Amino acid sequence: MQRITTKLLQPLDWQERARCHEVEPEIFFPERGGSSKAARSVCSQCTVREECLEYALNNKEQFGIWGGTSERERRRLRRERAMRRLRTAS
Ligand code: SF4
Image (cartoon, rainbow, N blue to C red; front, top):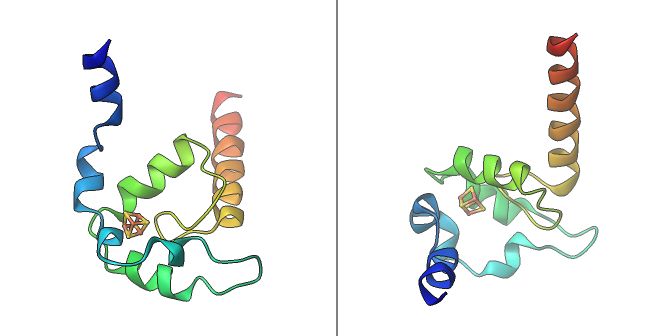
């Protein structure tokens, strides 16, 4: 059991290279109506941005800036992907 728990708590490989470890985590969770500019700036320099965005999309992360995107942008991306899947399936 301990081995399973330990494995679950291990950061994913890409997370160890995340640029957000270098800054205050609060900037990735701006208040409603607040600016996400600082977080997006950090993300724009991050080498694991794509991995981060895919993780957020696959796990339906609802809060914060992930891969340089807001919650609203991720919802739109998920809708677009779902529509694309439906079109290719029919
Ligand atoms: S893309 Fe942004 S939120 Fe994602 S790991 Fe990089 S710095 Fe962190």
